[in-house]
Amino acid sequence: MGWTANSGADGLDYVFGDRRNFEHYAEECVALERLGIRTQVIGVADYLRQQPAFRDVVVGAMHFPGDAHLRPDRYTAELARANWCWRPGMVAGPGGAAGSVPADPGR
Image 1 (cartoon, rainbow, N blue to C red):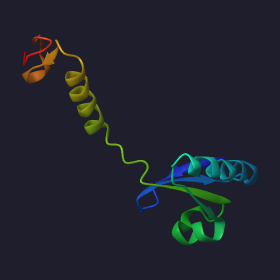
Image 2: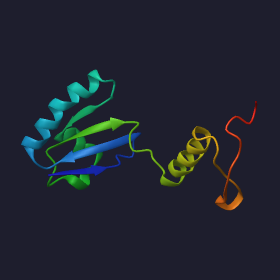
Image 3: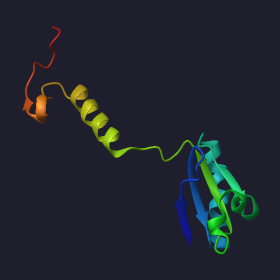
């Protein structure tokens, strides 16, 4: 069993209630670190000091610093902006109305 939680710190926690599952994912954290993904394996006593509400069910947790900071409104706005910049010939005008522009407006 696993849950995700925002620890209140900068990042995302994966919280585990099954010892085997926790140990499996703790081993994968080594590979993630090699790829440059920061991880912190947190034992039950340390995690319960941070999040006492899990007292009866948690066996350990993993913390991913800096993860889980996605705001859907900003994400979709940036996708729309990147798509507009990436696909010459199409532009969204005021109110989202589509129109066309030259493929190379500067030439």
